[in-house]
Image 1 (cartoon, rainbow, N blue to C red):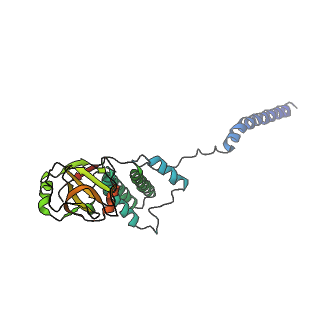
Image 2 (cartoon, one colour):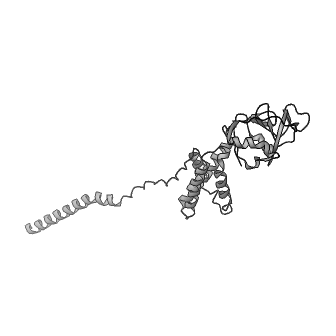
Image 3 (cartoon, helix red, strand yellow):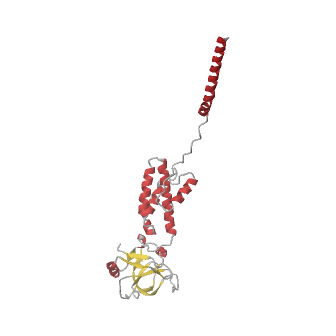
Length: 263
């Protein structure tokens, strides 16, 4: 009895020890079997902003359309990009002084996008669109101190001897004035009235107003015209004609800067 009792007591101790071990192990096992925490979402890298005051607005526009391409569409080709680069390089004449610098930045972005890097293509899309918005806003903004250098507004002299004094004084700057459909501005030159001076001329005639030492460039009716032809304030010396469309002169506003230079 005593031996069996000892044996049973020993088994009791063993069972008790096993129970304690299982109870102690249970939390650890439960902890191991717990589902892993949900992964923290990682935000997608944001496309870098172009160096443009409209950069953030343009990026927001592209984000809303999931960066669907505009300039790099398969059907778009390279023509639109090339045209924009040409416009930007010539943009100073339209009042966008940093146009050539923007063109260089856009051209570099486009070259990087040609490598096939998806992020670089998105950056190029932003650069192209932001540059276009900047240019359009420049055209819509009231301008001042614009130098008009349109090659189609160059003068074809009818009397070269009468333009020599102007060429000798060039280059010089002046402020434009308008009178009806006529632009005029003062010059540092004086001249006497020629015998064949005219008061009624054809649109696009380059005239020298001796009473005001000014060049007069009419493209249509003036306040004293009696028909569709320009009628000057008084008789003026005829120097030649504008090469191109005289109506382009209507782009010039009073007070804008005019630069006369040798062609």
